Image 1 (cartoon, rainbow, N blue to C red):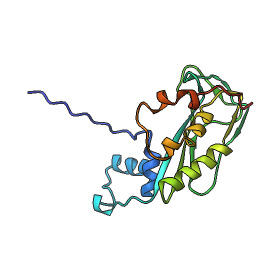
Image 2: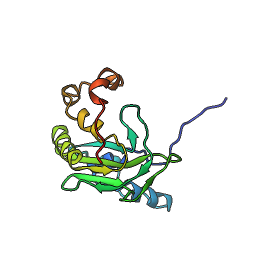
Image 3: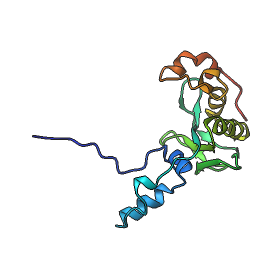
Image 4: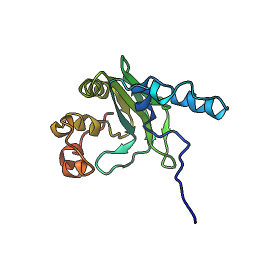
Length: 173
């Protein structure tokens, strides 16, 4: 008999959300375990606090969700309590057609989902990337949509609300 077990030993792209709600540094823990050290806690020791939201900021055309290569001419990244921006870009960075056009993983934490969403709306309002198209406006529109805010969404949400979420706009400049 043959049995298949899927095993994924890498961190998922959403690991910052888990880190924000548990207070754990998963990258550090994974490296320590790889070095042969045991985990310094048990499952019973873990606690979730608050809520976190992640927006993956991409260099992409928000109408067609296709990469938007070019040079980042200006950049303003949000900061403040409960805001985390995992990024490696800078003004002058080139977004290539040959690699993933992700600019950053923007994560906010709050003591409730509503609080985390409030922080994300503020962070998205402060975020600016010049010189290329991004999906920032898409995220801003998503976080203003009443159904999304009420938690009434599913995998068909974007298709149903495409005209509002993906409406054309002027580039940020």
